Length: 168
Image (cartoon, rainbow, N blue to C red):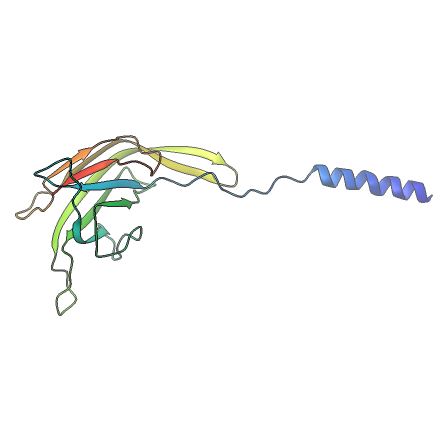
């Protein structure tokens, strides 16, 4: 009788152990960020920092959190929307606040359009979104600090290389 109980217990232990699956921990990656580098408009091969740069998504009340706000940088990464085929950002050169807390820097609006490609990584990671057919333009105003935009890679699948060059 004891052997019968041991046999049943062993049988259920094997069934239980074979039903276990590997933990679904995501280490494969995330939706890539758009990499932007800033260049001197007069010497287009030279990187040029933007002084006290601030970036805010159009319709948003908070700054983009992928780099330090109001820092002087020649390269940034920003997130594109994963649920829409376009995203617009206000890029502020020499960002500062007046006594009332209002922005007094030079504001330019950049509009990005793209097509989204959903990519299923795994059950643990789910989907990521890559972007293709990237295009960009700056909304013209009377005092644009951004003089030109060049798309260097229209397919955005990683955050390792430059996708957009902005000349100022």
